[in-house]
Length: 152
Image (cartoon, rainbow, N blue to C red):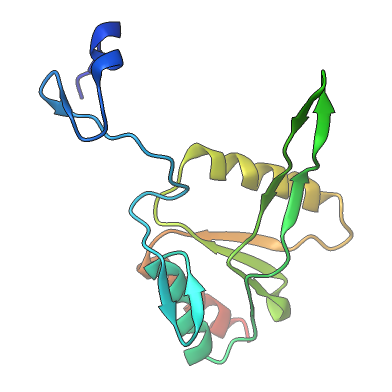
């Protein structure tokens, strides 16, 4: 794969969706690429993959908590007079019978990977840390559900 570089002038003049050196420059601030929020039975889901996981858990009668507690990864603090906002994350599902946190992300940015590393570190300090599972495709959701059923 060839590397593409831009001059400082090209970057200054670029705008979302505008062609720069023949390539479309896409700029955004989304947590997960290509995720579309959906609503089902009065519940709001961050993506179709999250909804798919929900339907599978309901279909196979697996005990779960949808949108469990938020984890504070870093509290708010002051630094040289500036307030630094807290960092938190909320997994998609918690399966209490399996002591497992499940998150569905088709494709996410690096910040999600860092948050999960911090969460794993925090949970490693607890007496019975839950397993953390990150599912990125419908096929992986299916394999995970089959594994849960087999463990019963």
